[in-house]
Length: 151
Image (cartoon, rainbow, N blue to C red):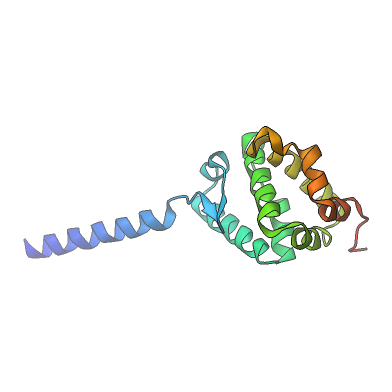
């Protein structure tokens, strides 16, 4: 009987630990991750996504490039992904974000611009329309409009 109780207790603790580790977390670095995006991904994809957000917030331009290329699954998932990038822009500021955006190639810059437009449209109140938001982030707008720096 005691062996059964110990085995059951160990299994229960293991299940709780595993469940805690693989429950989708809805934020990274204080940036809310859209529910549609992270529910559509595997736990491993969510882990990598949160790590990329954390690294990009820390200034890693390679993480930014990987985030731009990260598959969002289309539709609402891409709006969520764009909202994460838009929140990141607000969190780290125009200067920091524009330096990372400036290292992207032109295709990545176009993709980032589209994702930001979707993110500001979907993830913010009406007062954050992308057209007016672009005025608030002139360095990022300039970085996204400049030619490919990887040539």
